[in-house]
Image 1 (tube, rainbow, N blue to C red):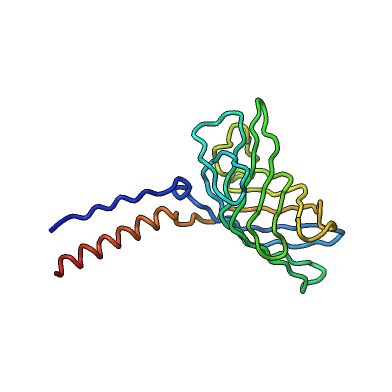
Image 2: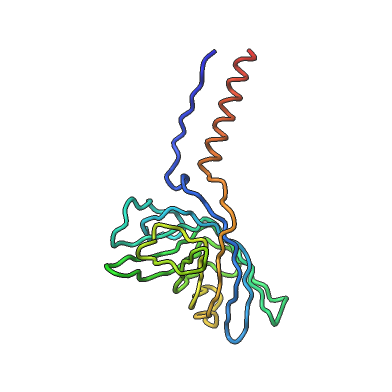
Amino acid sequence: MSLIILFVVVPGYLQATFWNYSADGTIVNDNQVYTVTGNVVIDDTLRLWSGDSSMPATPATEIENYQYSYFISQYSFKISCDSSPHSIFLFQGTGGNFYMERMDDMMGDLMWFFDNGSGEWDYWIGESFYFYHLDRTQYDLFSEIDVLAPYVRLSDTWYGLGLGEDWLYASTDITLSRSAPIPEPATLILVGSGLFGLAGCRKKLQK
């Protein structure tokens, strides 16, 4: 009986833990209030900023004064108008980032992006966001940039390119709350490879 050992090389971005964050909050635009529900899946690996919000960048090995990001692998939102329940917008996609720029004594240029989308928008650019601890105290992003927060507050303004000028600069109050880890693609690959190897061994033994 021969022993089959499988070595699987997995890309770096597949080794991260992906967290599901449930979204709830409001967007106020032109005196209309829109309720936001949905979910966002965030990679917990701190990454260098590549300028491409649709793909994971290289993981950061040390923190210096540089540009960083957390990758958003998936998102799905339903946005409904409170005064007109039939006015519903759906938006989902498979790429995005929380972008952060670390300087000598502060964090600047905090922006969030949702890209590769389908629905009413092709592209969201959020002006700022804030990370919070479990007790809802705010992160010090300068020193805690390498820790993915359990709460993310998307605040101030956002730009919804694709809906027209009347949707630019709408104010937001959306909270992303971490609800559960999602099985890593790397784990699924390794489990699948292991099952494949066991099936091969069993077939060989039956012969």
